[in-house]
Amino acid sequence: MSSSMLTGRTLLRGMLRAERGRIIGAIALLSCWTAGEALVPALVGATIDHAIAGQSLPLLVVWLAALGLCFLMLSSGYRLGARLGNSGMNRQVHLMRTRIAEHVLDPGYRPATARMPGEIAAITSVDTTVTATIIRQASLGFSALAGLLVCAGYLLWANLWVGLAVLAITPLGMAALRWLTPRLSRASDRLQSDIAASGAAAADLMAGVQVLRGIGGQDQASERYRAASRSAATAGVASASATGRIEGAQVLISGLVLLSAASLGAWQVAEGAMGIGTLLGVLGVAQFLSTPLGTLVSTVEAGTRSIAAADRVAALLADGGRQPGTRRPAAEPDAALALDVPGLGERPLVFVPGRFTVLVCANDSMRHRLAKLLSEGSENPGTAAVREGTAAAAARLLVDGIDAAQIDPAYLPQLLRMAPHQAHLIEGSVKENIVGDAALPDPQTLQLLLRASGVDELLGTLTDGLEHQVQGRGHNLSGGQRQRIALARALSGGPLARVLHDPTSAVDSVTEANIAQGLVQLRAHAASNGAGAGTLLVLSTSPTLLHAADEVLFLAADGSITRSTHRALAENTTYEKVVGR
Image (cartoon, rainbow, N blue to C red):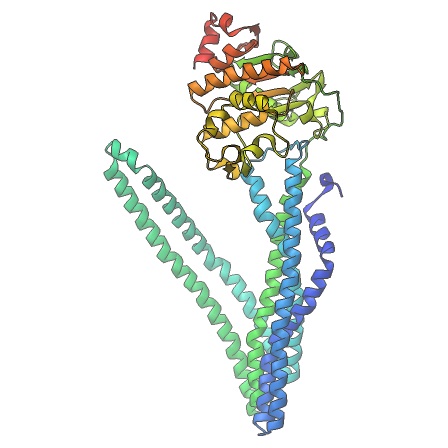
């Protein structure tokens, strides 16, 4: 089924069908476990009545052997059944997470609903697990049903009236407990929220204590901290009391059920309708009866949670936005780039092929819109409509006159390399972060590439050079170091049309000047080899990059466009304010 037609229920049905064999096996094995748990007290009672009361050693050996086989059955059944159920669950979790990763990392992914990375991570890590829990819970639920049937059969066989009474009283007790627990735990939940809020307030105060000392506010901060601490302590005591009431209710209701069974059983023993061993067996089975009943209730609740989680997973997988294009124009390093953006004075705004152009935008809103467009290659029509308040046309990035959204996303990197402002590094060496699995360029080109990105200075501080290991997301590097490596990656790969967004915002002015000079030298070297330097478009207000550019396009706040050089535009006071802020 295509992702666009996917729903939570169809996702769950597909999972259950895929794991049908494991689920059936787990149900059979876990049924041995629940049946064995129910039979243990019954076998103990039978041992007392038939072997101990009759003082028969052979019968004692037989019943003890039966009890041993029962323990072997229940322990093996649980161990093997739980393994089957958990393996099916974990397999589906892995498949869902892989599917989500492939979906959101696909170059053609165009979500209609804006989602923060944290939301996608929560769906991937939490909701997939909750969704797949239905596999394990279904196995436990059906096995609990088998255990319930064994309990009911034994109780009715042992004594009809006692069995009927226990089978009636136990569900009533469970229902009363289910009714009481949410009402008692609601107060506990509120108190836990108070504890969390108090802890957060205390953490915020402690985090800013150095600043408060600087302005003389430490006494007031200390008093607020003490108040928050007292509030957390009070809430903690009240929460513990609420938890104790819940546990007390559970013990009380379970005790009442057991007391009722014991009273009825004792009456039947006194009447001669039951033996002592049978009474002990009935009490043990009655006490165990709440376990399969509770498991059945938990299975229903888990199913509800799984459906809700599956709906969220399915919504993410179905949210693919526009279908990616399939066009494959000829690859040209000097491709003509253009922006077709509603609100610009020139549509489309064409950049001279093969040149180094810096785009300066006076309007912050337009600048953010262009930054997103140049980072993703397209704009969601829904986003444009929200921005304009009407059904507005979406902005487009054109490559040789073709909308980038219509180009095959797997082929687009051969035409255009877009480097967003945020530097995303992977776990691996510096070399792998720059060229991936490809070979390094020739020594002269490599030297110019490293100089044009500022990585040459960085390598001087790393003992392993290009083989220095980068931790996940570059956590062992500073922001400026991550940005340099990301810039080197954007500039690698030979002649290409490239779009960069503020590539030097995290480096110092000296490094930025070296990068600007290195960019000019790298492009000159590529042009001298006859391959072409490629079209380079940079969205930035850096005076150093503006000075190095072949051309500067200034987008004024009123939508007008001026094409010139940084030196000539320096006489424009509005331009000076934008690049100097």
